[in-house]
Image (tube, rainbow, N blue to C red; front, top):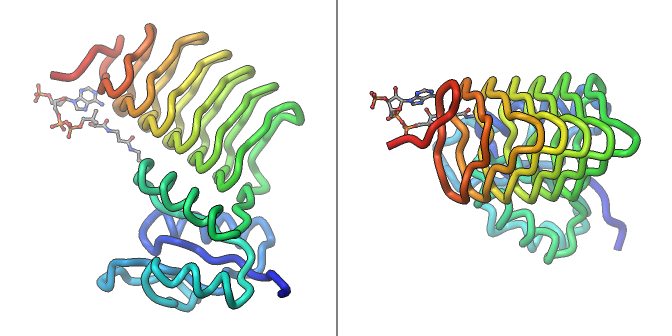
Length: 209
Ligand SMILES: CC(C)(COP(=O)(O)OP(=O)(O)OC[C@H]1O[C@@H](n2cnc3c(N)ncnc32)[C@H](O)[C@@H]1OP(=O)(O)O)[C@@H](O)C(=O)NCCC(=O)NCCS
């Protein structure tokens, strides 16, 4: 069987952003998009093939690669792992304007949006979103399904646990650890460790009530 073409999962706002990044990066257009929401508008110029449950059949028809373009971290991870189990490749989607150090590494299914900077020896897990213009400095360690939102800045050696959301425009002091499933609010200045599942915001960041 010849494996060819890329299947997108998710026809919402993040899906539209990923589609632009694919096109800017010179990928052929995805062969189609799957989305469980019948009310979603779809993606411009991309055939809407049906609900997510069709992924297995499409793999059987020879579609070889997929990308999960969903903002929900837990769902993106679960679907990404499911697609890997079905035999899809989950390539890294990387905008040509991004600057990725040669010594950095990215896992399966990551997307690197425009003007991201990923520093030396940074290690990024699978299904991670590095969103527009974020900076992840040298030696950072990001677990699976993290989302670093636009404009966030992570200092050297910052560690982020699985499925954490690092909010728009925040800054994280070098060496700090943000736990799994934590949420860092928009514009926060994180100067100390954040426990698993904790939501913090403010300057300096404190736990939200
Ligand atoms: C922190 C956050 C998760 C809180 O969301 P929420 O639980 O819906 O909280 P609410 O909006 O109900 O606000 C609760 C309180 O926290 C305050 N608050 C919320 N976000 C805050 C922030 N980023 N900084 C400072 N205070 C904040 C609110 O003013 C409110 O204060 P009050 O009780 O004194 O009125 C959310 O505001 C946030 O920043 N999310 C990140 C979004 C993001 O970056 N997404 C990526 C998109 S690409």
